[in-house]
Amino acid sequence: MYDRILVPVDGSAFCEEVLPHALGIVRATGAALSLLRVVADEAEQALAARQVGALAAEVSGDGRAIVAAGDVADAIISEARRVPGTLVAMTSHGHSGLLEAMLGSVALRVVRHGGQPVVVHRPRGASPEGRREPVRIASVVLPLDGSQVADAMAPEAAAFARWIGADLTVVTAIAPEPDVARDIPPGDILESSFVRARAEDFATRYGVRASWEVLHGEPSEAIARYLEGRRDVLLAMTTHGRRPLESAVLGSVTAGCLRRCGIPILTRLP
View 1 (cartoon, one colour):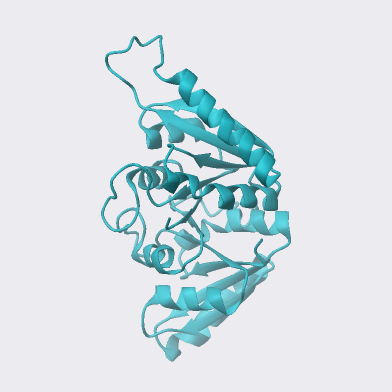
View 2 (tube, one colour):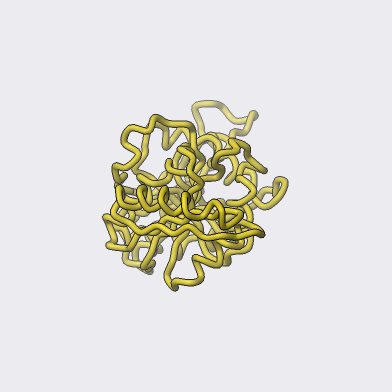
């Protein structure tokens, strides 16, 4: 599916937090791992090349340091396109520690303009220990809301799960209705039929192991509760579904999952 995993780094510990997930994908698939450091001028390139080379050697990958006086996102996209079959895996922010509409400005532009799915992980300032240890992704979780936009991620999610040897878990969330008794969850039968049928269809159509779950509550909160404590999961979500877009690109559910779940998200524009 992909021949190379490209991880942009900037010398900060934040950017390295996506490495365990990238290494897990590499171990599961045999894809090559490349680290990319983008600097603003040639005076920084030699030091950056030594640093990214040392990090690449630790994780059995290759490292490049390139000069890009313009947009860093453009440089990442250009490097991804230079080698066909490249998947970009990156954190949502680096040394700045700031988010722009839940995605750092660089990651936001890569998602917006790259034309391909991107694995995005929000760093949390985790301990450096274990940052070189691969995380095996056992399940790709695909949230659906009945919209064509959300369904558009299904082929990519199923193919990705099959590629890395993971299960596909299809989930949907039922928002609470105040007029319904608490012991009678509204819509469970209809939603269960819907999500089960979609899971069975994906299993047949894409040749992947598939299961399903109906969750309760506001979607991003329900998904976060469902995934709490797990690291062996990757979410697959488009940037918006039924809900209105938040500022910039990300839909509210995708933004909420990025903020709350602490796991990588495979995302793309619909």
